[in-house]
Length: 615
Ligand code: FEO
Image 1 (cartoon, helix red, strand yellow):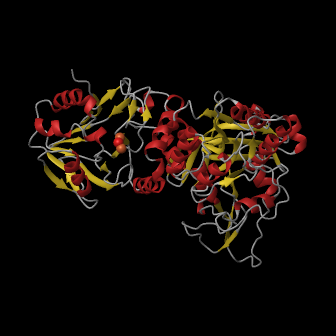
Image 2: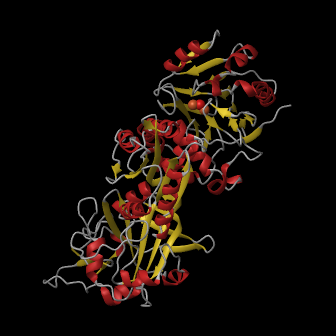
Image 3: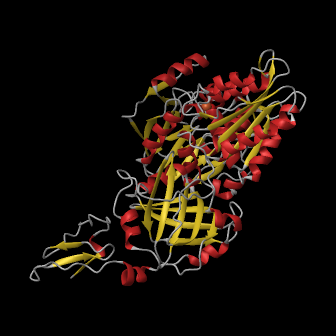
C-alpha cells in the first residue's frame, strides 16, 4: 500500500524507508535505518525528483502511482546517479516509458555505465530552466557533493531547493517528514554530523561552493535525498555545514581515541582524560577496536583537539588505529591539535608513524612530546601525562583572572549575569583561528531560562559578525557605568578587518571557549554557542546557548541613556557659529552642512543618518 506525504499543494514525498539495512554503502552502520527521499511535483507537467534504492523500489513505485493519481509521468530529474537514488530508475522507465529524463551530461554517462536501459534524455546545464506550467526549475551543478555528476534543483516558483545528498541525515523517517516535527538538535544532529563527515566530509571546498551558490537563492523549503525536509530552522543545519565544510571544530574539547591490546595503553589514555577534566576541559573517549570508524570520524569533525594512543603491532600502528587514521586523513580533517601516546614492549614505533599520518593533514599542530610506554605506564611517567595535559591546556586559557578563578569553577553558569542585561551596551568578542576581534552592540536578550539561551543582534558590516558566522561562538562583556569613551573608540570606531582592536591591551583574559573578554569596565561575562540564526537583511540575530556566565562585579550596567548623558563627549560645535551641522548621537561626530544626506554613514561609528540630530 502506498505511503506518501504532502509537502505543498503540488509537491508530495514519495520516498521510502529502510530499517533493515545493516551497513549503508557497505561501510556505515545505520542502526536507526535510512530514508530514500523522492519527490513528485504535480504541475501541468508531472516531475519526479530522483528514485530510490533497490531495497524499497516496490513501495516507491506504489507511492508514485498513487501520487500521480492516474496521470502520466512527464519528467524524471536525476540529480545523483549513486544507486541509493537511481536503482529504481530502470523499473520506473519500464512503468512510464514516455518519461523524459532530465540530467546533466555526466549523469547521462553514469546512467549508461550503471544500467542497460533505453531512455529519452534531455541534458541540461546551469543555463537551462525547465518550465512545467506554474513552476520554473533551475539546475545548479554541485560536483563532488557527493559524486562528480551531482546537481541540485531550485524551484524558483515555490522557493524550494532539492538539495540531493546535501543537508541529509542517517535515520529512517518515523512518521515525521519535517525537521521541525522532531527535536532535531537533540535527537538527530549527531547522525547528521556522521552523515556529513563520512559522506561529503572530504569535499569541504565543494560543499562551500554549493553553499555560496545557494546563498544567492531565496529558500523556503529544502528537500534532501535522505532525512528530513527543512521548512523552518534551516539555519540549525546550515550553521553546522558552514563549520564542517571549513573544517572548523564545533566544540573546544579533546577526543581521545585509543587502541589497546591488554589495557595498558587504554590506562594511560584514561588517566590523561581525568587530568584534562580536572582542568575543566571536555573529553570524549573511543576504543577504535570497538567503535566503528564512522562514529569517531564524526566526532573528529566536532572536537578541536585529538589524542591518539596506540600500541605498536607488527612494527607498525595497531591495525584498528592504522585503519582509522587512514580513514580520517582521507576525510581531509584539518585545523586541529594532536597529542600522541605510543606503546611498545620492545620497539615502539606507533608514535612516529601516527605523527606521519597526521602530518598529511593541513594545519595540524602536533604536540612535540610523545608519551612512550614500555608495556605499561610507570609511576614516574605520570608527570609526562601531566605535561601532555598542560600542553593541551595551553589552548584552553584560564577562564578568569586568578583571583576570580579561585572563586569560580570553569564553565560555571551564574544566572545573575542575566540580571545585568539591559538596553545597554556590550562588547561582543569572537575568535577565528588566531584572530581576536570585538565590536560594540546594544541588543542582547535572554530568550529562555532552561536551557539558558540568549539572542544577540549584530550588524553584518561588523567583522565580528562574520567571525561568529564561521565559528559559532562568542562572548558578551556587559559594560558597567565605569566605562570610558575610549572603550567605544577602541571597539566601535574601527573595523576589525583592517585593525587589531586588542593591539594596545595589557590584558589577555579569555573564557573557557578561548575567546577574549574585557576584564575592566565589565560587570559580567557571558560565553555562548550559536544554535540558530535569523537573517534580517542588514543584521543577523544569533540565538545561542549560554556555555559560561560569570559575574565580575555588582556595578550597574551602562544603559543607553547613561551613555548619552555621562560617557559620550558633548559635540564640539563648529567654530563658526553661522555654520550648521548634525551630530552623531552615537559617537558625537559632527557633520558640517545645511542638510545631511539621507544615506550618510558616520565615518567614525558607521551608524546611519537616522542616528544624527541637528545641532
Ligand atoms: Fe545518498 Fe551519494 O548518495
